[in-house]
Image 1 (cartoon, helix red, strand yellow):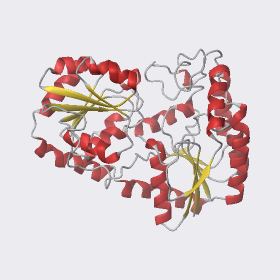
Image 2 (cartoon, rainbow, N blue to C red):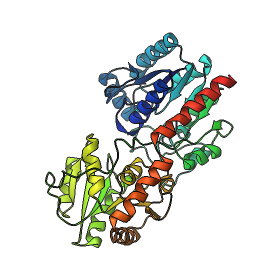
Image 3 (cartoon, rainbow, N blue to C red):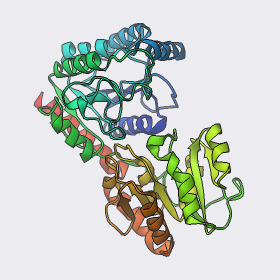
Image 4 (cartoon, one colour):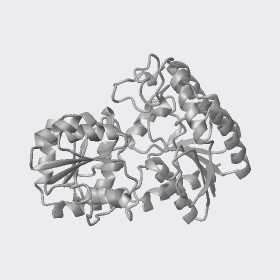
Length: 404
């Protein structure tokens, strides 16, 4: 079994780590694993294929900002990737995020339709459905069901300033994908699977595979971090995202701190320098993004409650990471977030209301952490352990190849 995955980043961030872990599972099952990616590339146990350069990405970003389409600077890297794919001759091509200013999607999708090898496409966001955006919940837009136009999110990723190409991109993307015959979608949540059934791709085989978590990495961890960040001896409410935007609920955090009062301290991880200065005014401890998993686990472990005021989410890995470290979660009901809270003893899924979030934070903080921690961990072990989840992909690969 020879599998080639394509993703924007390599063994970095959530999608990069997911591709890496799937690659490890392929190797463990005696297969060959290749991962093609463009940036933020960390060491991998799979065979890595570098797509383009930083310069290509930067030029594509500039082009997209002006013209709103895949840039000409993606063409040569995409054609080179296609040549490498032909040389490797994989049994299955597994796509993740093909957006991110590093590929020419028109060329790649046309090739995949003609190459006629099985394609598995893990859907991490809503980009595949739209003519521009990666999520549409925040603006309550459903134009993607028919035809995108007058896009209300041109100033959001992937950002463009001058031209609205959403109609033509939506039409061409949909047409190109529908030409790929042997295609299986693996959305990361039942929520995303439901969207596929409402889209033009409803006839394709769809198997929801919720993301797995490396439980040997994310686990209750003895905290040595309190002194480093001068965290006071109070009930800690932890917030984690990267980047923090209005869509992640950043604007809720100061009010949550005010309403919780002096018995609580909010700790926010993943901020930029400007956000860090802003949060200081509210006596909120702000920490910039960290790739240090142990440090992150220490923060998850010492928190009384993990709060997630996100307004758009495909699943929410941060919810799972907090639970794996034994901390209950209070999360807004956005996208697939409710799928991470498997019972009411380990967390609460609420509507977008900061008052209710504060009430639930206080309620969970008053429960003896020792009583709830084991249940939080057990929930993730039973439902999201990567050792069980990634095997599902191996089974999907085998079924595809057996039926080809």
